[in-house]
Length: 265
Image 1 (cartoon, helix red, strand yellow):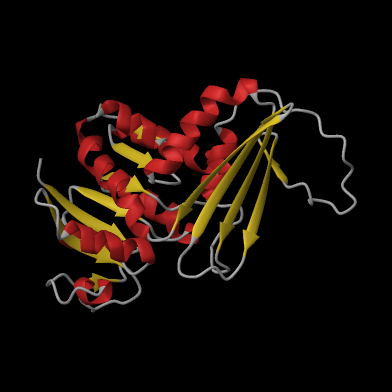
Image 2: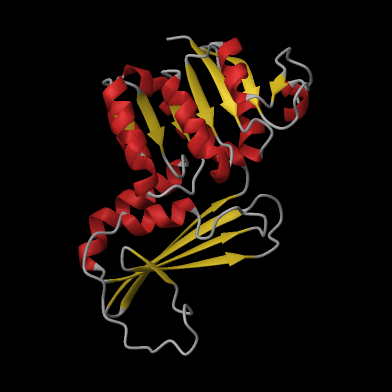
């Protein structure tokens, strides 16, 4: 199935990688992109030279002119609700990688997607490694009552914790083990998400570095898993697998985990 793709957030780290990657995919065509660098060639922005597709900072008119089959959104949390409203209004299938919205924030969009028979994925991390770790946590959580998650990013990271860290915490069902330590300084043991302590570290790591470390424990045994991302390229397999598979899924589909796409492949 040939796909005409519109990229929202086309000048960000992931957005530029999306633009470069689409040029290499035979079944995909970039038809437009939304970012602040209006009037500039998206290929120039992405560092590959001109490709004849000009950026716009008007999302509505950009989508109306491009007439895409699907939109990929890696924009920013503050603008995401407005973007989602527009995608639903235009009846667009969408692959969303922008994080920061809660389950309550997404609830009306889930309802609208189902009512209109659209197909959306809202996944906090399209990396295959994180997807495998999330599945592993689900399988072994009942045997390991102690669980802690650390997310490490550069200081410019928009949210704390990352959407990925929050999703890993939510993936862990099971009663938390009691911790008797008293917090002398509130929050030092980490914020609780689904009863799982999550710590965020923001340091000047080189490049757009991110790391998620998961520690699972029981008496006399600790499992430590670290997933490190050094470039945005690691998300591309998951994103374009989703772009390829999502339109073939049942109308009203709203995907929250990459494993749902992988299992459907």
